[in-house]
Structure formats: structure tokens, C-alpha cells
Amino acid sequence: MTSPSLNINRWRAFPLLATAYFMTIIDLTIVNVSLPTIGRDLHFSPTSLQWVVTAYALTFGGLLLLGGRAADLLGRRRILMVGLALFTIASLACGLATGAAFLIGARAVQGLGAAIMLPAALSIVMNMFEEGAERNKALGIWGGLGAAGATVGLIAGGFLTRYAGWQYIFYLNVPIGATALLLAPRIVPESRLATVRRRFDVAGAITSTAGLVLLVDAISQAPQYGWGATRTLALLAASAVLMVTFLVIESRVQSPLLPLSIFRSRTLAGANVAGLLLGGSFFAFVFVGTLYMQQVLHYSALQSGVAWLAASLTSVALAGVSQWLVTRGGAKIVMAVGMTLIGAGVIWATQVPVDGHFLANLAGPFAVAGAGTAFAFIPISIGALAGVAQHRAGLASGLLNTSQQLGGAIGIAIASSIAASHTKALLHAGDAAPSALTGGFQRALWVLGAVALLALPAIFTLVRRNELSDAVVKTTIGERQPALASAS
Image (cartoon, rainbow, N blue to C red; front, side, top):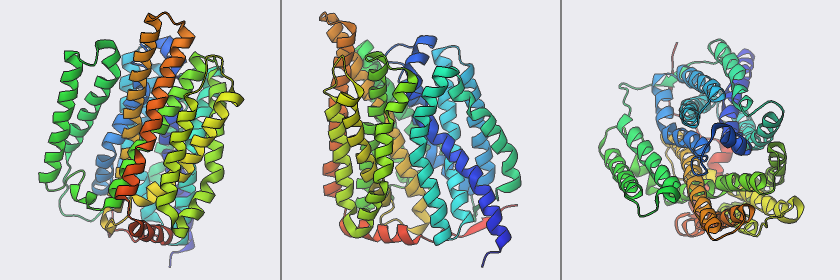
């Protein structure tokens, strides 16, 4: 039995850890509604503006697994504080940025801080609470914060941009991060995995992240240089070489960042493909939809943030229904329905006109796509843990987060490239700017809708109903964690 004092200490530490998590989630969306303002102030080109989002998502997603490994081996509280410090300093640098390149670089460092901080925080939570009702309560709150973070980020971004300036969407993190740094040594317990040797797959982390950065750069800059240009082809080739190198490294090193054997579970593989495509469709939908509202309909940043409530509130309202259906054995079908709804909502949005109105043209697509996220996120999260050994549960969870973040980064790059290319073609053909922009956004939305629907073959081909059913039971009951050694 655990003493009451330890219970109190746990629940004193939990708000700090949850705050760290909340900051990383908010920063995925808080910049979206501020992008046009940032672009004007810092003179971004249309194709480079998406790097404000993707620089964060790439380093966040690309280094999550390495961050989790470092937390397990070097001490979770220690790594949490390193991540908090990086995230806070980078947030300050973002607010002080006076040029596009400086802001993109600071956002990349901010993503690195998040990649270090998030797995450490979640590992501490799993270590503090034993399996059962108490852990389920903590993880329920944790999941709720994740769902609310996207909404809060959009609204807070709009409010701060309008009434204080876009810089304050980054300054907001500074006092919160500094306070968390001061409190962490006093209230957060230290722990690490008991192990003889500490091995880090740094080569794997570098090759995978570099390959993804080159891929996104090639896609996003193709409208400017041309898809057949030497630069574009060279970057795509270099990206492919780096990704193949990453796979070779992972198959040979003693302690790989991503053990390829984990993909022997077809359900896990299918869930991660679905997670990648979910990020690539829905996160990019938020990016394109926000630009349409501000650049074509001339919404303010605050109006854009409030408009996305149609998606967020629908998602929150249906989360309970989704969980109820999943626990009754329909996880595979629920996952497929969720991705279908996301695709349908995005494709519906392709009909937006130059003189669109929120209720007539946006509320419906936003609500349908929001419903899709409610039905997709929960079974995808469960499927990503299906058939995974106990000592790999953290790896599987980190892999899903990585899939979603990298999917978002690649999806935004693709959408940005397609929209810019088609807009440029329409302008050359004589269309007025609002009409050309709308045509570009419509073309991008068609592709994003198709990306969401691509998840259906993966779900029905790879995901196994029996593995999902077992994972639902394990997730509901809670799984025992690996042996841990306290660190003073």
C-alpha cells in the first residue's frame, strides 16, 4: 500500500508534468492563426511560411524516441529539466525574432526541447502511479489535456495576436517554463531504468531527422524551383539515401532507436500508418483552412481561432461515444469511420468559394472532420500498443507520437507546395488574387482529403480485430511497467 503522503506528493508533481505536456501540445497549433501576421512582419515567402509549423513538428517528432531513451537511461527528472530549459529559452528567442531564418531556427530548437521534455514527463507519470484506478485517473486527465490543447492553442493564438502581438504566443511559455524549472527539483521524483550500459542511437536520430528535413524542404520549395529542377531532385535523392541509411543502422546497432522488429505486429504497423495519415490530413487541414480564412475571407486571427471551435467542440463531445464503441469491440470499424469522416470533411471543404461564409461553407466541414478525430484518435492509440511487449510500451507510444507529428509536417509541406503552385498558375492565367488563392487552397484540400482516405486500405489490410480487442482490455486494465531503479 502507498502512504497518504506519497499520494499527496504524486498529485503535487502531476500538475507540473501536465503543464509541461500542455505547453508542447499548445505550441503545435498556437502559431497557425498567427501565420499570416508573422509572414507579413518577417517577410516570409508563401512557400517558406509553413516552416514556422514544420520546423517545430520535424524536430519534435524526429527526436521523440531519442528523448525517451535519454530519459530512461540518464534520469527522467534531469532530462525533463533539460527539455524545459531548451523549450523556454527557444520560446523567448522565437518572440525576439526579427527575421524568418532566425524564427525557423528557434522553432526547431523549441521542437527539440519538446521532444526531450514530453517523453520524460509521461515516463515520470507512469512511474509515479501504479496500475489501476489511480493511474487511469491520471492518464484520463493527461489525455483530456491533449485534446483541449489544440483548441486552447488556436484561441489563445488568435487572442494574443490581436490584443498583444504575435510575439506573445511565444513569450507566454517563458514564465510558465521558468516556474516549472524552479519547482521540478522540489516536487518531481527522480527515476531511471536499471541497466548496465547506456547506449544511444545518435546516428539513427541524425539520419532519420536529416532525411525528413530534406524531404520537406524539397517538397515545399518545388513550386519555386520546379519539380524537375536539379535542386529538387538532388534533395529528394539525398533524403532517400538518408532514410535507407537509417533503416540499415536500425537493423545493425545493438540498441536501435527504432527496433524494426516492433513492426512484426501488423496491427501496430497499421495503426502507425493511420496515425501518419491522420497527421498528414487533419493537421494540414488546420493549416490550409486558417490561411483561407485569413487571406481570402479576411478573418482576424481571433476569428480564425474561434471558427475552429466547430471542430474542437465536436471532437470533445463525441470522445465519450468513441470510447464506448471501442470498448465494445468495434475499434477497427471506429478507426475506419474516423478516418472516413476526416476525409469527407476535408473534401467537403474543397467547395469553399471566394466569398464564403462560416455557417454556410465552413461549419459543416469543420464539424465533420472534428467528429472524425474523435473516432480516429482513440482506436489508433490503442492499436499502436497492440501486441507490444511490456518493456516496449514506451517505445510504441513514442512511435505513434512520432508518426503523427511527422505526418503533420509532411502533410503541411505537400499542401503548401500544391496551393502555391496552383495559385501561381491561376495568377499567370489572369485570375484575381482572391480567386487564385481560393483555387490553390481547393486543390490542396482535395489532396489532403485523399490522404485521409488512404488510411482505409491500411486499416482493413493490416489491423487485426483480435489484437485490437486484446489491446483494448490491456489499456483499460493498465499494464505493469518495467523494473525501475530510483536515482537520487
